[in-house]
Amino acid sequence: MKEYKWSVGLRHKATREKLNVTVWAPKNEDATHKLCGTLIGPECEYEWTGTGPVYENNQTVSREVHPVYLVEWDGHEGNRHQRVFGDLESAQLEADSLRRQFDFVQVRREDDINPLAAYSKLDLVEELYRRERMGHDRN
Image (cartoon, rainbow, N blue to C red; front, side, top):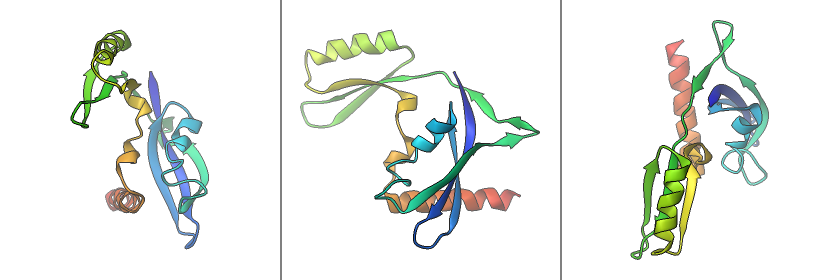
């Protein structure tokens, strides 16, 4: 599967300050959706201003992605556990086996996991500003 690099434009609702976030996704809509509920939305501090492809040497920037499947389950002690598989069939077989022992078991593709979800909203904004500054420092 191929992913493209997208620039998602944001504007702070109170200060009107603009911010561009770079996101990898297969389609424009997917890139925008990755920020929904985290930065963009009615309960969020930013509003969306547009999404477009990133170009280098007059060509869109892309990369080949090989999906990875995660099997997640909650152990008896209440901790979340994960195992990584290179194909869906192996992940589903492992999940079926774990369902005999545990109540919560799920299989997810790696690209279904929002890498920004690990940040609190404040930390996320700080991280995005840091990344943007680093990008400007290189130019």
